[in-house]
Image (cartoon, rainbow, N blue to C red):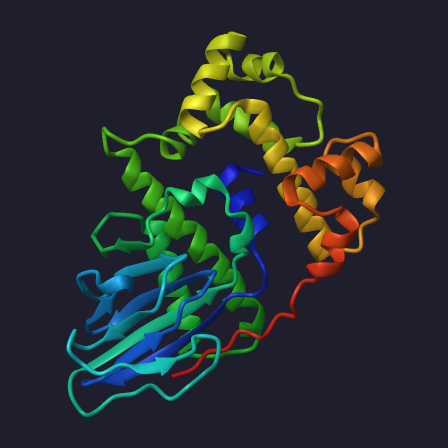
Length: 311
């Protein structure tokens, strides 16, 4: 799998949720802080996004997409001065509103595990605004159109289609943001790492076979660089030496298996690249502070709620 897909898969903590709201001014919705992520898409009309921490309001027009993660309470309203009503994106509720200008918005939430955020996500700002522009990010626009259609006209199969489209939308949002970042001459870090042929090749090798006993020299060969040149470039872009990142990713995979499956510990150890259960347990405890068995007992996966839609 590619790094971005792996990152989102590892952070998943449950099914995404979304609702479609038909509103008339004046209206305002307040969304409480969430450890995952939230998105808003304007299908008709316009509105204002009120970011966390008192940041300046952002006007959203038809087709605009806003994504928020790791952020505090935020709002959505027909006007920055409109009163806000507490809203929960995980439950269908009657949208607030009056008799003024209409707007239709999609609001959704992603359940993401914030305890082990991939460093790639640390470069994504708390608020991502992707304005609708002709010719820009056609795949993202197609996903928005499909999602809007499915949630505007519920039909058989929507229970499976909508969550899949929501997962797809998240990847398109992040891809679009990274694509825009790569156009910045000052871009650095993971933005460059994912598009650098040498480092991307090494990252792909790690993610394709995390259990393999990689050496810096072998990863450097995959990158087409000498051992020293590869180690320096990888560390500069990724922020960690190659084998440090490899260990971090192995432990992330192991923790996810422990949380979300009944896979025996010896099998988890093998998949994480350890031939010895004892060595794996010691490495895991160094990373998380507790043994794998205790971690599993304390981190059972919450039961998913159904994704809902409606006006």
